[in-house]
Length: 140
Image 1 (cartoon, rainbow, N blue to C red):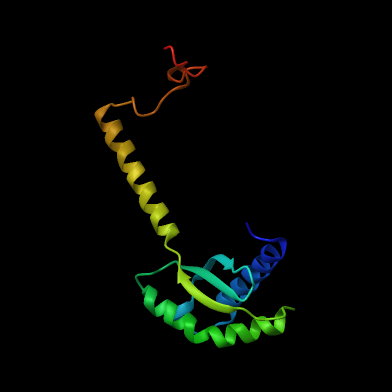
Image 2 (image 1 turned 60 degrees about the vertical axis):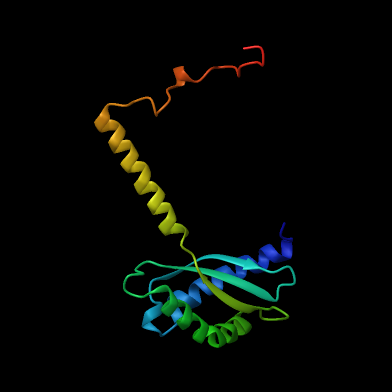
């Protein structure tokens, strides 16, 4: 579990990194990037920054991560100027594919619903009448 200090630093870094990455990087490959998560180590010296790009087909992940790695010294300097931290943490960037996976799961669920609707199969969606009011006992 994260300490209160870790949580505060995480929130500060999340806000500043979101602003820096979306507004202040001149690299066109890094446009449309969104910071999705920031994980701070216990000693506050290492930070994992998870990013998502809205149009991966236009800019592949490896190009995005390479651009962020190249911009890391600039980002760290900006963080040092903006935040009052004893040590500016080392940043490592990771691509977050959670939105893509969530969209894929949603697509699969919609496909299953459509197939069941086409087959007239309503058994998959339980109604309140199908759920017992009390859990069964071991004797039942």
